Image (tube, rainbow, N blue to C red):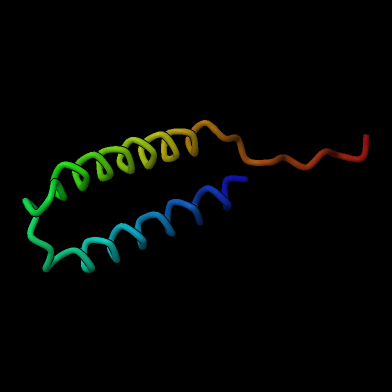
Length: 67
């Protein structure tokens, strides 16, 4: 489970970097884009922080002995 979370966080970071590069030439104040952009980025930041925090709460799986 922890590895899936790490992979999801890495993919989220990669997607946000790609988004930043894709939006470099868009005027921020055009048709409310800045407000929508800020709302989206804040939401993703909250999601990423929550996921990162939950990662620290996961215990690594322990193998049971044969007993």
